[in-house]
Image (tube, rainbow, N blue to C red; front, side, top):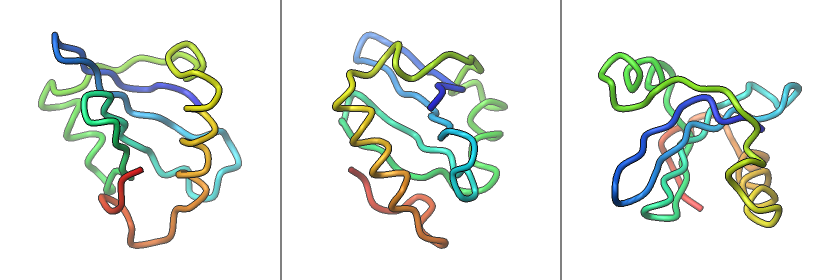
Length: 91
């Protein structure tokens, strides 16, 4: 998993997470550490977040931010994706 977008302020950070290659459809995930929740991004939503300046583009391994147990939880969340769930359930 890679972090491909970030937004930071005094309250915490939010990250756009790209699953490993080979993950079906590679749907991006928005993780907000302020709420501790994650959700799948809708098609085009990522571009809008960058264009509006809400998120900044970046690229580094998710393991630089998340502990191993958090990565496992995110991987389970990504594996649970079903078409039509973008913007749906949070972890």
